Image (cartoon, rainbow, N blue to C red; front, top):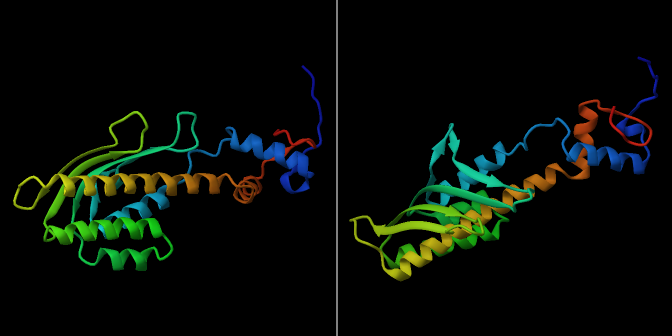
Length: 201
């Protein structure tokens, strides 16, 4: 056995090329745990409730299955119930003023509900997985009658669009957390050390 002494550096002391190597180490499997998406999932749940979607609960929060940044492709899946939410179009604009996709979904649901006297309700499972049934939904009226084909199709498409919106906000958060700015802050906060060429020690 022999002991080798080496000079180690903090991230801020590395040159640009070495910093990039250190970032790649961190992103490819450093011990930083799972992506922190609790705030994003809570936000999706808040927006869902505003437009009338009550997602199935799990562990105290919305039961959303998802994958972003993986080799199998990005996807999001949620289950729940939908019913008319009074003032949803105005409320979602107040809650998420810059999110035009949410505004569009709320407006579509508002319009189809108005045509059916605000009586449409649905049970659904929505997925953005490419090889799955995208939307499994039962759309009916509050008195138990099946909704028209046109109304059912409109509600299903809106629910599918909402699942796609969830996927996109999760992906945005994933890539933000892997941005140079956040990666650098995390490496520095954890006081990881490196050789001069950026290899973790």
